[in-house]
Image 1 (tube, rainbow over the protein chains, first blue to last red):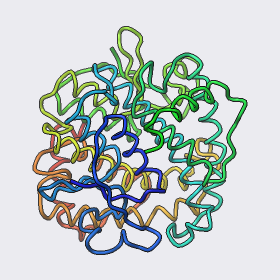
Image 2 (image 1 turned 90 degrees about the vertical axis):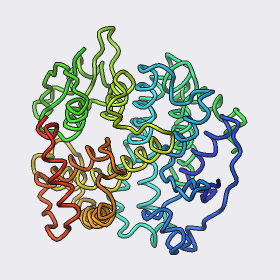
Image 3 (image 1 turned 90 degrees about the horizontal axis):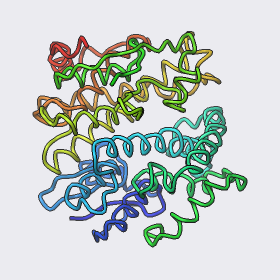
Image 4 (image 1 turned 180 degrees about the vertical axis):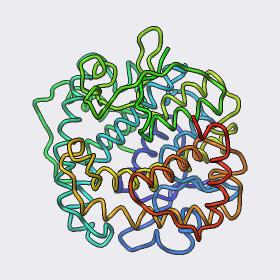
Length: 203
Length: 203
């Protein structure tokens, strides 16, 4: 078993934090997207979508998509539960993880992909107007999360979950996306300090 | 228990098909987004993201996000399994459902939202260049799915799953998005005939 990833990219970080929270060790192999290694035949066969990370099982099964990889390990190692335990918890974590993906990480990524010079050859065509349309949505979501976090410890409730991992990766990826943080959002800052202080955040 | 939805929208259809496949009946209440009913205080309190569908439980718990609603019902009524059964199946269905969301339904929706005149007041700003950037990706994904479906019955394997529901809703939403189908993709057509012929497709 191994995970093919690119260390600086945001999605592989979600999987590394998830595994660190579970205390699971898996060997990693680096795929350098800046050198086009994701387009080589060997990798494309594992993931025709040509994206990292990919979990490669010993029988040759390849699982792509960060959350699919995380869910595989949740099935094998249910504790600590990072996708919730009861039906309502599982649905609530799924809801919040998706909100963090669609209304936060996604917008940060679009700003990065459609404005950053390093993405000019990867994102064709870059649409700067689309990046700018995403910028205010990042701040709307930050305000929304801040308000929510004024009433509870973590994104999806009183327990740390995969929704916190997605939100942490999104907020930290604002820096390469050249999006300034909002220091006046004090509940968000309290949460960010807490999740950044967990050992998993360094994974 | 009830589900607040808007019948013509693609995401509520995903939930209706899912429930029909499970044989679960839940009362629906219509929220007319074209009249701004999703922005009224009552609905916004249930889902601050102001999107349909929302599952409202009898104790007042509100679950938004289509896949979160589906997962709630999968937990309560595991058979037939639409998210997979074994850990590898669950990861594989998650992977394919996400591929269908991110590389298919998403692109179709972006073409619709950023080009269709009816969306001018909902999607501000509309970015036509972004719609056009999504158009070729729809066809790349259709070709990819066609190739995959030449080797198996359904999107994620030999069993019908939520990935088929997402793909069916995406392909049918190409019509309002004014995207022409590709009749030369025969495996895709075979699959589309099969899933469209299931009673759930009319839900």
